[in-house]
Length: 222
Image: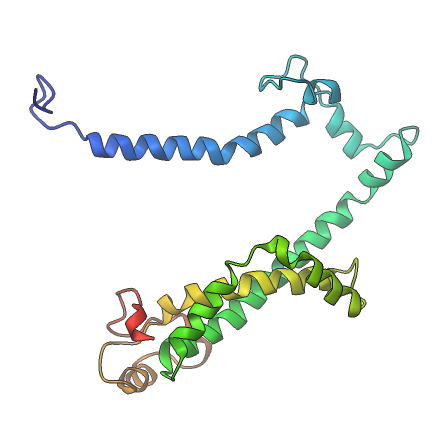
């Protein structure tokens, strides 16, 4: 039996259908935790903690949102205190996220630019070292990291979070960014000189791929 659909005269795109089906299943898998957060926000505590759990709320309620927007002074002290500091938690998260992103963008771009445009002995091993550092389980670094943060007297500070997250994310940024700064094809050193002549100068050169740089960077060019 052929793969042609009767009456249509063309081959069924089985491969495309399989790819789309896999994409849908992966999307459902990734969206399930966020969907559960939204659904439990309109459930009562007893219903959200029920076993076995269920996805559709039996008695939807907005009491959780009312407790957040208009805290009850007669409620439990712990929950009232937590709700009162929610805005502080959001502010701390925003400061940490923005700062870590900027540090990764600035430091990672400069390091990646040097690795992609300036040939030097051992550059490929250095990039592999950055990638290998991401393979260390984070759990194995918890105690040493705690001791270092405690020795620096940075416990319970935003700066400790910024240092920690930057330490974990910067090596991956350095690994990814050289693709955007790949050198043009040619003898060693010629690409960098041609880039300085043909590309914008200053900070604009960091995000300008330059001539003949449409192909991804290969490990042999590092």
